[in-house]
Image (cartoon, rainbow, N blue to C red; front, side):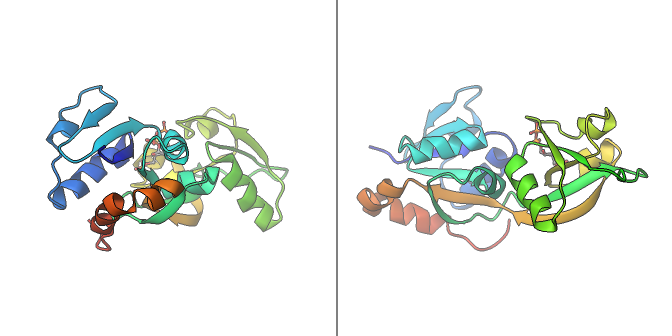
Length: 205
Ligand code: PRP
């Protein structure tokens, strides 16, 4: 059976494909997959899922390996083997708010997809905040007065800028990471080890 790799759909997917191609792996079936969520190449089977679901497929052994943002691992702390950083997907976690607007005197309300990270960050500062969980496009929350600010990942900074927000504080740095199912790593060691070693490139793309 071919090793199964779970890939995070979206921006990490494209960056992974560039990286994978640079290692001379075949990527044509992946670039031509259309809306298919399961694709085979000559060497691997790939499944495409949302970041947090990538960790679920790896944790349950459906996928042997997974490519996921470090932000997802920090937020959800799945029971997977976190192997190493991959040379793409660099981003940082930041508190942001509307440009030119002051924080309120009283308790802040923060919107985020990352409620655990947000809670831990403000707890560490000794600050009590109200947290509102959103599933995406969190930049809308301060603009529409749902929250005073947000905690979110910033990659290029374009989304913040185009929505009139600025970074107030950056506090964590992440990149994409290679994760593995704990037992697959032992049982399928002979098959997986050479792939893992190949993917262990230190150079940033
Ligand atoms: C992420 C993040 C920001 C944006 C940052 O969202 O939540 O919204 O990317 O990237 P930038 O700094 O390069 O603009 P994503 O595109 O993953 O979508 P989502 O908001 O729907 O989760």
